Amino acid sequence: MEIGVLSVKKICILLLCLVLLLSVFTPANGESLTVKVEPHRALLSFDLADREAVYVTYKTASDNGEFVIYGQDGHFEAVCELPGTDKAVKLNVVVYSLGGKVLLKQDTVTVVPKGEGPVSGLSYQGRPAGSAREAVITAELDGIHYRFTTPGRDTVVIKCKSPQESHTVTIYAGEDYWYEGVIAMPYTYADDKITVMVTTPTTSTLYSGEFQMPTNFPPVAEQAAEGRLKGVKVCIDPGHQAKTQVETVQLAPNMNKTATTTVGMAKGVVTSRRESIVVLEIAMKLRNVLLAEGAEVLMTRETQDQFVGMLERAEIPNEWGADFVLRLHCNNRSNASIQGIHIFCPYASEYAAQVADVDTYREMGFTLLRAMEAVTGASGGKCTLNDTYVGNNWSKMPSFLVEMGYMSNKEEDLLMANEPYQKKLAEGMAEGIIQLSQMRGLIE
Ligand SMILES: [Zn+2]
Image (cartoon, rainbow, N blue to C red; front, side, top):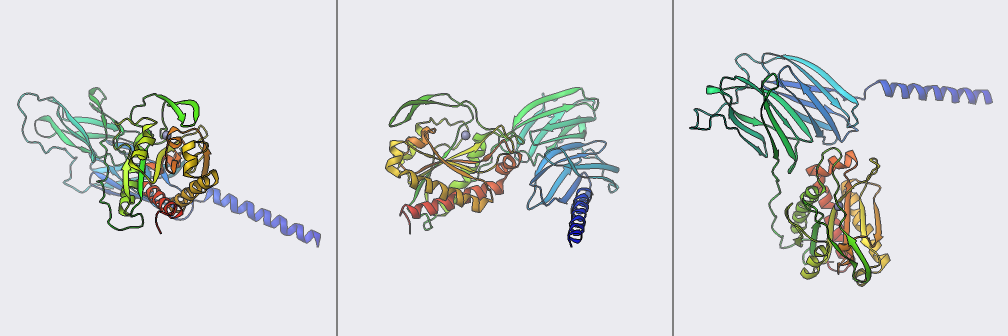
């Protein structure tokens, strides 16, 4: 009997090894790349069930580029603009993991329909008086707009590069050697830097410049007359601002210690986005979700340039008489694998003690955390009570510093830059505020 048991065990182990080997060498079902080539662009579509985001590179003889793309439930779609590509096209597309591993690749050969030459990009007719060579290049929400002339030169190469994508395209001159058009930058976020270079096909520089993608905040929603948060006042404090200004202030009303601004803020490991813009974008969405629930909302800042001091971040909600303060931040650690939401509440502040005892404060923090995790799907969250944060210590109402995720973690950096996930974070916080308002007896 024992021999029989051992044999069964051995067979099981062998089978397990076989399954593991097959899973290593066989791609999972559905992981194929579909490339549809149209005149001057290619449409990509693929599924990678276990990926949030991937890097894509594309290349033809005339045009090439790369970008980071975020999927929806494992499905990815993207457009590669190919303005300089015509006739028989050999398009090479490679999809990489964020760690640089090749996941999918494909070489497509196709023929562009006859009569479709390369895009001249020219809609400008005639020459403006005077500044014939002057380049007019601007960054707009739909991409880089260019208009310039290079007398005698009928082909140039334009390269546009942001932290999330780069495109190098060949452009042909229109009438009188004028060039005009738009290079789409669909994967570049608001406030990001973009460099633009125009060169000859042999890479002599004709123009170079640096631009900033404009911000694109949603309009402020109207406060609903009725809603689950009718009568509740919420102050939103988006952490940081574009330029750090160092100050030293008293740590807490009852503590004979000071706190000095920590220089620097979190920066996205993949996106290169700054914490100050990410928290502002999420704050704008949170404001609209709260207003739609009938809450009154006040923000401590609404622009990147607005400076708000450490004490001011408590004085503003104190003077306004807020019921709650949500202080939005993004986290950062040297260990890139750490993920999750981390909420901080005040611990030994005299003002905090008047709001709630330590156990109640902790319970409130965890209530907010669980509500956020339920909506976002984030896990591994924490809630900590400490004396570290001036804004928390000086608040005369429940105050929560919410680290919404880690910008040092590739997945969370991309998630926090992604609009649907930003909306989930906002909805999770609003849900938390509803539960806290019930706990505090502010609503039924
Ligand atoms: Zn921060």
